[in-house]
Image (tube, rainbow, N blue to C red):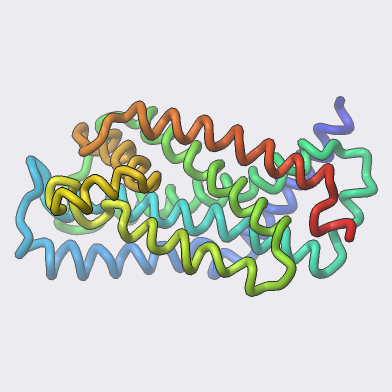
Length: 257
């Protein structure tokens, strides 16, 4: 068991060092993006939108912007790292080692979680010093739980994508055509009450909308949707995606053929 833990920690260490070594590609772009979002939507547009409920528009969009960055970076980190290892034939070294398949799944997924949390720390730092923002996290422990579950959910999703992908185009398909639409239609920039009835009902089927709502509740103390829906989905989704990744790793899908 001790050797297994060494293998797990080695994978996590490798992924963490990779993130820190190329920090200009992994940590800096999300910071630049949120600064631009805060400048455009917060200062230029937010002053015309006014308040949403008891919160200013700029405070309203901050939780969604943070979650957008966590989703993109946790998913992208694992999918690109694992597929690159598979493509460059570096993965064989891990597969022939005595590290259990479950620890391989967890090791790469922890890399995505680490990147998601590092990005979150950078963005919160920007938000705290940004002018015009008076944001206080109402439920910090709940915010951490939602961010952890979200990062792990999309890390497992990124690993599953990398396992099933046969070429680099397959890795970029889901982020471009599935994650981006779900995220931008996930209530980051608007409340559920601002939608027509048909689109409001349709938005309830978007899991990202529930995640954004849960994090917004943790930050602001109010949300459009019940918190329990997001937590149940995230817990069940993490278990399902972990088991799916483990199944395909044991099967050797895309890595032994």
